Image (tube, rainbow, N blue to C red):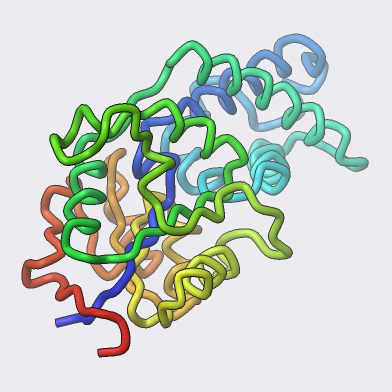
Length: 254
């Protein structure tokens, strides 16, 4: 049985069904059929080839600029001076802000329930997403709808002890820097932290940092998460109970 003191949550795809996948796909499609239309025949791009699996394996979990470059490379879209990646980032950011403001996303109920169970059990909590939009998303999720013990107006952003979302790190996932920073700020050793992730790069980052990792397979990607090294792969976080056979929450220093 693992002794766990802290849960570190990714945000996009774990806590919220954010519109990032849609924003990347729609933005790339718009560019390919407008400004970059002359490139279509010499690349491997077509709209139907941008799938959830492509998003999860190529883009999800990476910093924005790295995600854009990886997406262009995947579809063999030339970008010798990185100007196309920059434009893709800018257009995608405009779209994601609009979609968030429109409320075009939802919180994952199973993740919120796990978050509240972990907090009730005495675990420390950290939010650790590469996305610079994570905080904006979390401020729009009202936790009082999930528990009578949460004050009205309490948002998802308010419940964390530590939040390192959107910070500028020298290394992006799959490097463990973001998770190690969260653990250090929580004053919890990495081996007593469990990361909750939905992307292979995030799973790899957690394991590289010496942490346990729960992979939440929301798009039939159990094999991808398992191959990345997740200690447990589930299709619902309701299967994870902090006081079950999976974990024992201990007080710090024990």
